[in-house]
Length: 384
Image (cartoon, rainbow, N blue to C red; front, side, top):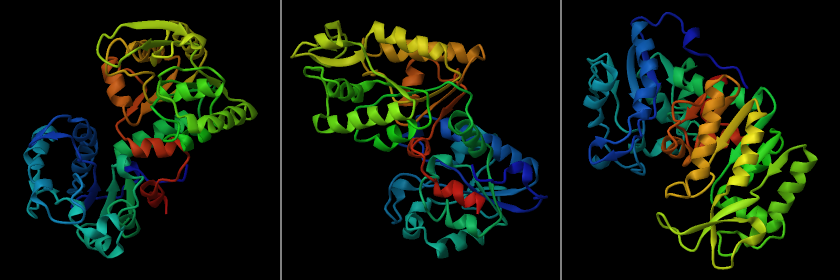
């Protein structure tokens, strides 16, 4: 991992102004925030900067206003919510406050264009830049990349936490390393799969994508979701995994049903016994036992994507059982577990283990692109 400076490396910033890039693109219902995770996770950085006597100006995007000023996407409503959550007064666009929330970065067309002139305008507002928004650091935007070239730049505490967790999981992991990857389609996770087979000892596949791999091995998966145009690709991935010493673990049995609805009548069948009019919606108990045996022998777990259609019972069973198993070994100190991306946070919350893993990333695309082995512009800019 390229070297980057953290808050521990900050010079004396008493009386200085820090431009802080945070991710306050929070889910809302009207003007009510429905999930405070991103707000809560940036609080330690806010506290650390205030303790050092800094004034803070916060940059964040919100929604997709497409480079136009749109009152529906104004961040003004967040100021009182942040004040309460952080126990510090947060003012909206008020130069006289110690913590100032600036307006939506995406009101400027130059933000997503990574415009240096816009970055310099923001840089002129402060003395130091701190990026605490790992979740948007896969974007080469003016507030994540160009601005870091204009000011002395540092990683915030959340950014540092994310990068440390990911480095421990994939860059310098304790082996054996097991990756659990779910999701609907191979086509959306090709880069991820091709990178992981070079990095991990076991690659456990679940969700709809597992059906395609099972079909690629010659089994009839009935009415299951299956990318028939990706069968050769699946075979290539399995061949390359074998060459790299990575064991791909596929389901040996499924939970199948004729329809995808709550408490639908379901059957547990071996992969060679899927009825023509049934669809695989979760992996079965034999598969769960095999996965748990592999987890027990692992030292590092990386998880992206649920094992089945976890939103609806009984097709959430494998995700819950395996998540509880991973959480238990994490609590015992036997494994390091890092999960994130897409539906993974929701799946871990559904399983009741959200706080029991070594690290649960709230980043979606950035977490996935890191696992894919890609360079994240916002992170690379901190090292330049």
